[in-house]
Length: 149
Image 1 (spheres, rainbow, N blue to C red):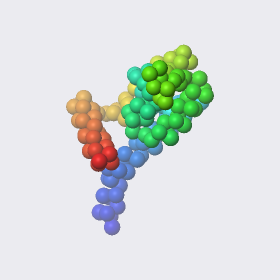
Image 2: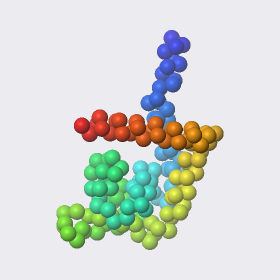
Image 3: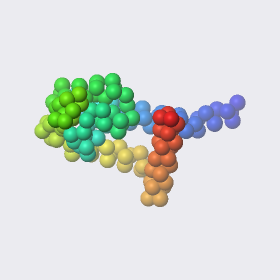
């Protein structure tokens, strides 16, 4: 019984789930005063790097369905952090842009991300940091290929 419990406690899925939940709580707490939900954080962070991409491309980059993307975009737009504009070449598509209000919080958003990453990797050597990143990238690749195919 103790051996089974020990294996369950060391479950990779459990650790990933804990990291995800703690990340959501941390980001949610940090962004509460800006009326941005933790689920919208990755959308805005992606737009800082890829401003003007289509809403569909945004969903694909974040590996979320169109409905999830539409809700996040709608909420960020309602709060004034982003704006949607019809694509000039294809009227069926919308491009998503960060507004001035969104740019005003960009450095704060990036600080939240950096501080959280630093907390996660506290006590790791540089080699360990590189290794964990490589392992996680491989896991994402493995599972995304499995889910997509």
